[in-house]
Length: 221
View 1 (tube, rainbow, N blue to C red):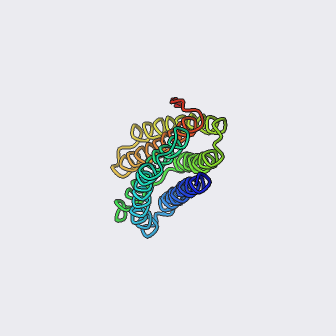
View 2 (cartoon, helix red, strand yellow; view 1 turned 60 degrees about the horizontal axis):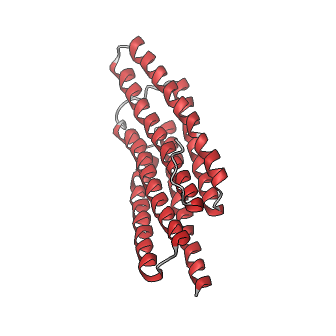
View 3 (tube, rainbow, N blue to C red; view 1 turned 90 degrees about the vertical axis):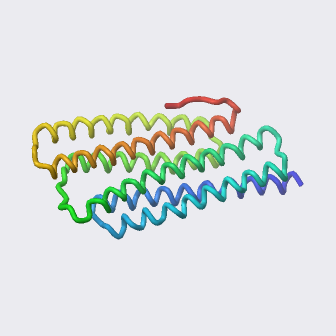
């Protein structure tokens, strides 16, 4: 019976990989829709967010079922809660990807005034967040708290890049008076802040891994 339950726990944990892959795809598509001003791709992200929300709800329901029927011991209960909380973090992360896509949709009838330097920073932030999420899920599957702590440290670079976006957009708004440039500066800030929040959610997942392995509640930000 115990082996059967462990297999059930592994299958439950595998759901986290599935939802994380869906979220990483959403990040990729959201940034591509921004880069290419692709309305169709942006709408795919927004529509796909409903699927990710559904996956998170299914994981929550499965957690309640496991707790009610299996009455897991402390270490297994930590695993159940860690998956539940991490899936919630991923769902919120995906919401921010949807918000980026929503920015693209909102500007569909407005000429795009782009700033290459800021675009490059935005893409750097997105690349870091995507790799962070993939590595965090790998650490989760391996129950590797050391790797989780290393992944969380990368959020410092995301924060640094956010500050660069603030500096660049402030300069843009101070040196240009046309409304299009000011509006795109605001949008860049919204997008960069969304990516920064994604990094925070990945850091939360890393904290769940440490908790799952040791029972220690830590703050890694």
